[in-house]
Every structure is written in C-alpha cells, then in structure tokens.
Length: 453
Image (cartoon, rainbow, N blue to C red; front, top):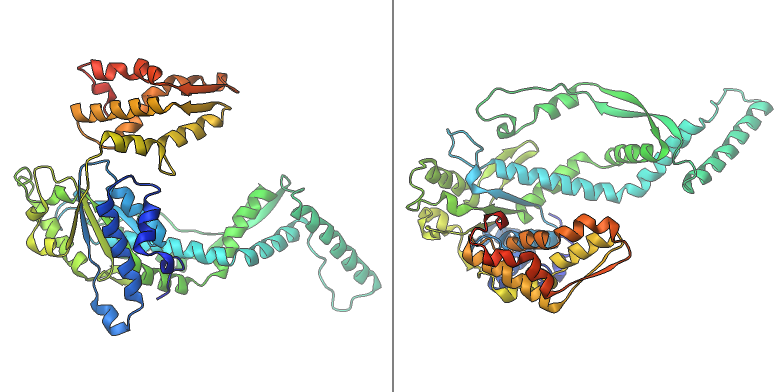
C-alpha cells in the first residue's frame, strides 16, 4: 500500500485551515472530518495485524441543504488525493426492486480510483512518451531510407542527408512551426461491438465488462486519420503513455487506494430512514439492510477484482426533516459513530460566503466579466444588502442555504452580463442602491416563486 505524499503534512489543524479556504463556518464538522482523515494516516503507520483491526469512524452530517455538507467531503478527498464518490441514497433500492443495488457504489469508487492511478502513472512516463511521439511524427514527415545489406557510398550519403534533414525538421517541430501541417497517422483502436444485455441487473451489476473482455479477445485494428501535427501529438501521446504503463500495477495500486483511502459520501440518507412520512415505501428498510454489510465491511466483486470495504470511509448526510438518525435501523446507526450537526447559515455567513472563500461568488463574476474587459466592483454596503436579501428569501420560503446566493446574484447581474460585450473598458460599481433597485421586489412581492431555484 502506497503512502500519499501530502498526508504527512495534513495535521487536523492544517486540514481545517485548508477547508476554511472554501467553506465558511461549520467548525464542528470540519474538526470531525479532519480527525477522521488524520486517523487514516496514523493507521497506515501501524503494524499490519493492528492496522487491520482499526476500522474508520464513519460520520453522519445533519443539517439543511446548502450549508456545506457535500463541499466539506469533496474538499477533504481532494486534500488527501483520495478516490471520492458522491451518491444519493434515494437512488438505491432493495434487491428485487427496480433500481441500482448498493454494491454498485463500491464498483464506481474503484473505477474512479483506477482512473486516478492511471492518470498519475501516465504523467510519470509523459516525458518518455513525448520523445516517442516526436519520433513517430518525424517518421511520418520524413521516413528514413531503408538500410540495404551491402550499402555503397551513394547509399551512405543518402542516409546522411536524410538524417540531417530530419534534424532540421525536428528543430522546426519543437519550435511549433509545423503545428498546422496535415499528416496521416495510424492509431490503434479496439473494435468492440455494442452489446445489449437484457437482465434485471445489467452489466454494471455483474461485476465485469463484456466490452473489456471482447476488447482483449478481438484484434486491434489500426485506423488511418488525417489530422494536423498538433492534433496528432495529442492522440499519439495518449497512446504511447498507455503503452508505457503497467496495467496490472495500475489495478493493484487502484484497489489498494480504494480500500484504504476511498471516501464514499452518501447524501440524502434521511430519505431511506423509516420516519412517519416514509413508511409507504417498503424498500427503504431493505436499502438500509443492503447498505449495512457494505459499511460494516464486506468483499465486493468488481471488474478489476475483489475489493474489501472494511476501511473505506463513509460520510453520510441528510437534512432529517421529520426524521432523525435514530429512525435508521440500529445496526446502521452503530456504523456511524460520529454525528455532527451543521448550523443554519446566518446573514453574516452569507456576507463571508460572498467574499472570503477562494472560489467566492463575487470573485467568480468578476473573473467572468473581466474576460469582456469589464471591471466589476462591489461596495461593502452592496454585499451586506445582497446577503440580507438572500437571507430574507430563505426565511420566507424554502431554506436552501448558500445556493440562494446563486439565484440572487444571477438576477442582480443579469443586465450587466447581457450587455457586457458593449461595456468593454468600463468599470462598474455595484452599490447598495443598485441592489435595492434590482432586487427590492423580492422583499415587497408576496409572490416570489420566480426567485426560487
């Protein structure tokens, strides 16, 4: 099992600091996930016998929509460079009903892990692959003369001239002077017929891919394409990098990473709880019982081999309106020992969300309009007014958390965005008065359905 380079420096304090760049507030949730992630690094340092005994402390996040539950889990996975999968519990149904079975989430996680590891290994061989691609393109532009068994003086001179010309072409190729020249390349493509499987579960649930099996059996046939040198470089680079990496090592590392560092975020887990409003759907408890062995630890068959789920970290989340985590079956509750309640967003939180995170909405709109040569600025009073209006709409209608800011900002900047191409070189300052003019109707009107996502 490999150790990821960033993990050593990811102390709980450092993790929280990184999360603070993207998520406002929710300190309890950040601390909980930071400790969970650090414990995985600590576990890797233990002797094998003890390491296998330590199970991850799965987490349930409880809070309304739009307060940062998904974002915390997603950013956490990015920090750890870990395979991450987000699923909605409501899309799974009990075995025997129409829908996806819960094991498919593990297969999806493994697919993501394989893709991650493959890309990493391909980057490691990129320099070597670029050299091979350069030679392939030069072979197309100027093939070297074939060697003869008994070369004479004339043949040697011909080869020497060809090599000299080839080096001149190489220099031009490296300077980018031949990027638009059309050449004919021969790329290898797998011919795999489309197969439909008429089965209640489908290919994905069967733990294997007929496409992959047939792709290995059937012959690979070269396909001739006429493309520019620039396009050829991309196509051939991908092909050469895939040839240079060891497929078996990719799969071995990917399965190890999925098993020991994978994170599955199960959203809307409250939708499968047996609360008063949910009893009509008989499959809900069945989904919980199917989910239980996955979370407890079982072996799932995938197209790449068997995968143990014992050390995958599961983070569940739900609003739990009308239900509570205690409505889940007791066995499943026991597999989520850490429960964190996320706070509802306040007006002050909205102000901070608009300006502080690295991906703050105001920064996004400023960057978008700057591409048209328009400089967009917001007065502090305007930011407060936007936050106030967004908070009021959430209070009066459905509380959708920070997502309300997307609706409000889009409405506010609709006019500027529409005419941005005509405003090149101008500086536009959004004032509190402008915000009130554009969004005042939200507060005054009783019918505000058009402002609801």
